[in-house]
Image (cartoon, rainbow over the protein chains, first blue to last red):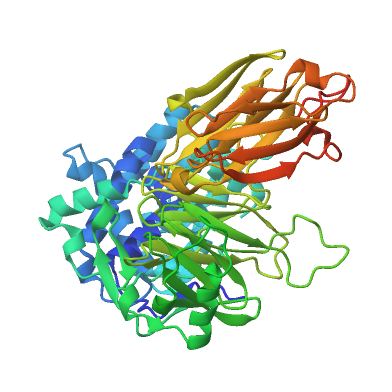
Length: 174
Length: 415
């Protein structure tokens, strides 16, 4: 049985129907990544809607290089990153967002993880989010962040190492 | 990553589940960004990407098919132009023509066999198969997967129709619920996506080939990969907002209130005081302009018959059952417009007639007929002119919950 789903269609076409298909299929994954970026589930919902609206409005700019899904991810992630800025809210670094949310959560273990994530360089954090929260494979992450596949692997490895170190410092072994 | 850290990530940002799909909102926002309705742009055929989790079929769209944008119904999807599709072979046309040969009066499909066309091709069960589709005279269509099967939606209003298939080679060890393959069609007006639910709790969303007027329907096929230890448990049709429109399970309708029914909008179609208390046939609309009905008595609900899509009230046949309780027996059913009278004949030769009301019948078998050896022996139906439509014997053996005798003490209530 093949994993391919349909042929006879140009894979590179950023068509309305194709974007809609990505939306309908993967909405929950987009929302989860946006929630990780924004620390607010309602804001995530709004940001993802807006992100897809931008993808629809700008679909003519899709070059056809790389999977459409990766391009949609790039657009939506960028909209989520710029979400607060575009609303005139004070620009808060992602580190601040994550730590603030951790403080309100109150869970020590989760708070430590949030702090560790917040301390990561942004690219590492995005790779972690796209890999673990969206379950994207390396080629799609590479397309979404416009980096090479090898860079994805290296970045993810570095992120894991940094997270492990940070958590070992934060939560001493019993 | 070690499991605890993965679990911590899950706690950090819990997964979203069953979020409504607000695609119309996306389009509205896009329009405000570009100042141009997205649907006015050229929209070639959709191109889904192979997913790592999903396993679906390889559709091969007929090369001659022309993709056209379809802003109708506000769903903004891409349709295949039926009239430029590849015409069917003579053999296939003859096959479609045979559908109405010998069909009982009122049960004809009205298929226009000469207009049969190849809509798509898909590979399942180890072979590429063509999907042939032909319109019907009343706005519906018949569909047939080559060397597999299909069906007809005579009026073109059935929201979801699914053909279930087990493993290609079944053995004595094959579980009875090992459904491996589903093919089906959905109505363009009501349905936007289809979800195939699997026993391992995963959900697959097979691609849908949408076909233009006069068909105005979408077709799909999904087969579980051989190496995968899962079976198909349900197929669910969703609208553009992600709301559940209709559902198909291998057993047909399940006990209880029909899932398609909009229960909050129900109304009592027939109400009867019985020896088991008040019995009610409730009728409720569906999201596809259809109608569902169920019986409630003695604190239990049971479907009267499968929910009817829009317009099928007019052409529906008859569906009925005897529903025994510990105290009495009810006759409940749905009867199409041509059925004016239903008559029971009892073992002692007496008869009693009942008239369906708004298409539904609910009656209590007279208590005196339930005593001793006396019981229902026959059911006959008549049209408004008094002509008999059909007559069937009533079987007093077999499943106790389908017989016209009260349940014995200790027997559990019927579903």
